[in-house]
Amino acid sequence: MSADHSLRHEELLPAYALGAVDGEDLREMESHLATGCAECRRQLDLWQGDLEELAASVEPVAPSDMARRRIQKLAGTAAPVRSRPSRWPAILAAASLLVAVFFGWRQARLGEEMERLGAERDRLARQVSGLDQQLGLARAEANRMAESLAIITSPSSRAIVLAGLGPSPNAKGHTFVSPERGKAVFYAFDLPALTPDKTYQLWWIEGGKPVSAGVFKVDERGTGSIQVERAPRGATDAWAVTVEPAGGVPQPTGEMVLKG
Amino acid sequence: MLDSWGARGLSGFPSMDQRTPLNETDLLRRIATGDGDALSRVFELHSPVVLGLLVRMLGVRAEAEEVLQEVFLQVWMQADRYEESRCSPRGWILMLARSRALDRLRRRMSQQRREDEVAAGEGVAVRPVGTARLEASEQRSRVGTALGVLSPEQRHCIELAFFEGLTHTQIAERLKAPLGTVKSRILLGMNKLRQALSTS
Image (cartoon, rainbow over all chains, first blue to last red; front, side):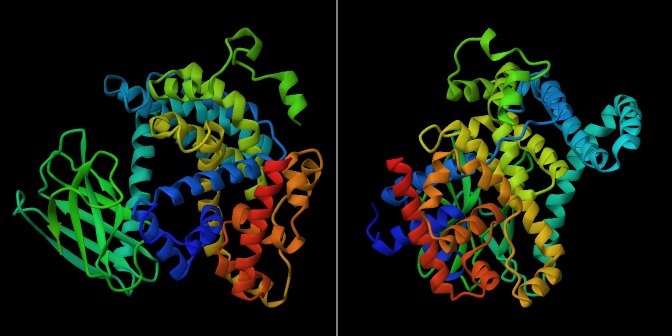
């Protein structure tokens, strides 16, 4: 239990588990959870267990044969992306499934005519499977970029430049915060790659307290990025990046490499 | 629905009785190593309730099926992120599904904000999609019994938050109720729900 744990936090937890907390309540709850309060984490897991029961109380619905076939097809491929030697078959299957999902959605709406087109689609999909893979990946990237662009170009967007510190004096970072969206996007440049047991973690500092904005890795060029889904809408003292154990930590413990 | 599902089984997947007993956490671990059979078995186990939740939240079968596939694709790609100490495998998958459904609803909400405002302005009480189906199932479920101890107002607020992803403020606007009242209804309702679930 953290030092500032209070009854108020416990009262906010059920609504927080529901996703109903907003405004100042949300900021207060997330700041508190970021302190690593074990009691709140324990209670949050219990509330989420109750919500699991609520979710599972709905009337079950049997998936269509088409959905089953697609999952079966996916299951028939090699290991998912975590297994590097088998990465491409899994990505190909995933991209193929994404494309199939898109086509399936249209097919359901156009009935029998779309069934005929679906067969044609399958034939074409086989022919252009290489393009399908690229399309799925490109679509995901495009969506991510569009979201980032919307944050950067929102009328009230603020930009914060982070400068390199300590071992990475040439590194730099840019944070763009959209108060109206409550989101932010962060880009890092020229950061050294880390060993697998380490990660970079982004923080914002508000009222002297660091709040985690998420973890990220960098590519071979030292570039990394992260989208912050719940960014501070008001002013912050600073933004910073530290090196932390893989998975991140509730409070910064490692060396600070960027600050601004 | 479940009975007919169970009787028919999953075409193409081995039937349950031909295989060894399941430990769901082990299945997720196996999925994380790329075991396609484990993915099939998890799909077989949980897809009906996941699809039920998605239909309940989205109200459109075709869209729910689409999200269902996205969910199991995510399970396939991210099974290594499951934390046994935090929740059950079913709970993890259901929360993945809920999160994706809420993304869809928010997208819809931003597109239809004007219509929603008109509806709210006219004082229309918007019920969650598919309430009738839930009401039918809850008569035979322990959650249904537990929900029965909540006041209609408490229950409505919890359903709006859980199935439609509305926040305190949005629920207050939707119901034209004071914000403090909405917060109280959710807090009291959730506490009652827990008490009823623990004693049922």
